Structure formats: C-alpha cells, structure tokens
Image 1 (cartoon, protein in one colour):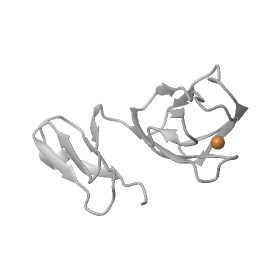
Image 2 (spheres, helix red, strand yellow; image 1 turned 90 degrees about the vertical axis):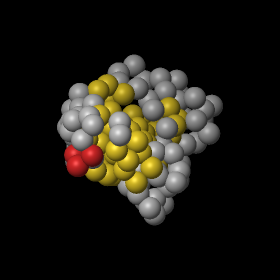
Image 3 (cartoon, helix red, strand yellow; image 1 turned 180 degrees about the vertical axis):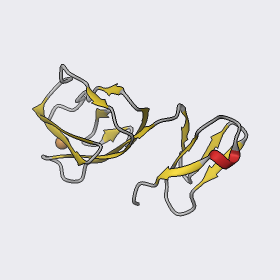
Image 4 (tube, protein in one colour; image 1 turned 90 degrees about the horizontal axis):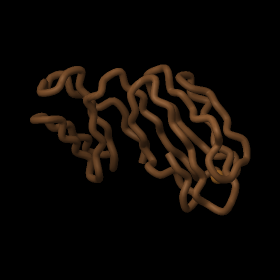
Length: 130
Ligand SMILES: [Cu+2]
C-alpha cells in the first residue's frame, strides 16, 4: 500500500491473514504511517522510500491507517481469513463468482465468502465511511 499524492493507494487493501504489506512512499515528502487498531498497532516513523521491514497482518479484522503528518490521509487494511473476496469500484458492487454483494450508501465495499460459489456465505465485511 503506497503513499502517493498524500494519499494511500489503494485506499482499501484486502489481504488474507498473515500477509506482509510494504508501505512504499512515492511522494517527495516524508510520511509517518500508523495504526492504533486492535488487530494491528504499528508505526512507521517519518520516512522516505520503502521501509525495510514489511508489516505483517496476523489477525483478521480492519486496521485503520493514518499519517501523523497529513491528517487527511486515511486508509484501511482489511484482513480476512478467506481467500474469496472482492472489492468494489463505485457505486459499490462486488462480484464473487456468481453472487453479487452490494452496498448502497458507501462508495466502496468489500465482499467475502467462506467458500466460492455460495451466495449465502457472501457478506459485506467493511464499509469505509464516506
Ligand atoms: Cu503523510
């Protein structure tokens, strides 16, 4: 998940539990990325380039990321126990095999299923606030 134009790109990153995530800074200004979320608390203090060590997301749930320098920066890492997931583009429809997951009011949403091809198992796990 990079920092580009003083924003997290992508703004929502979906990974499976145990994934290592790098946070390359593609801006010319320094960023200070942190999360206080219970599933993963970490801090990448003022840096340029790519920090040597990735952040390992070893618990499932949602980590909300911010930057100490740029208060408007916000990103979400959604950590799932299932490899079957999709993220939407606006206006918020996710296609999981034959099933559709939609969220009406948010611009982005994430759908996940425990098994593929099972519509009942699909559900919206996170809706970033608009
Ligand atoms: Cu920043």
